Amino acid sequence: MDIHLRPIGEIRSCFKEKFGIPRQSNLVADAPGTMLFYPEFAREEAVRSLDGFSHVWILFLFHKTGTWSSGSWSPGPWSPMVRPPRLRGNKKVGVFASRSPFRPNPVGISCVALKSVEMTEKGPVLHLAGVDILDRTPVVDVKPYLSYSDALPHARDGFAGSPPKTGLTVVFSDRAAARIRERAAEIPNLEAVLRGILENDPRPAYKDNTDPDRIYGIRLYDMDIKWRVFDETVTVISTETD
Image (cartoon, rainbow, N blue to C red; front, side, top):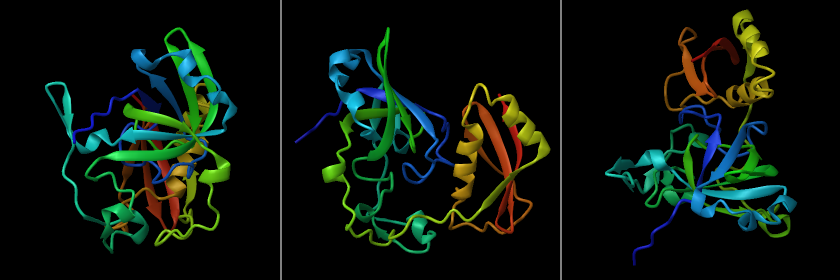
């Protein structure tokens, strides 16, 4: 049986590449995003009453795990065993015991805050927060979060039994701090988002991260962020704009 999913829209977020994206939604509560509907689905009645909910489930496609050819997308390879970041890449678990993007059907799901529903000339726009989704990711569905049934406080969390530690301290060089102040009016939560990302240590856990002179970088908004890590302290070196 063949099932064809039609993307209904796409996410616009501050995350321009996979490296640095929070590993779960709401780990960086200030991380903003918007959902734009494609013309066929950009109808006011399709989102009517959605603004009464504080959170929504976004179902999306890990579109960077596959390939595009002649206007069609093909899923990439998958593995029955993966190395979750929570286990520092040192232990394998079954792909269905993980949230790895390399799945037989690369479907992702995130529960994010719905800040507002804006009606525009091109249709509704959902303003979101706590996003952990790559910019331009295709969305296949939106569903309201229901606290009475979706929140299960006594559920077991397996090997991810506690929230990830945010043990790194983040400091900014004078140059980086000045650039962030310059962009504050344009991007009000820039510092908070960047702190949240770096406190959660986006570096691959399975690599040697002990070199204090190594420079790491991510793309955030329209900026190239560079930083170093030494003795549990992240120093943001530069935040250059394109």
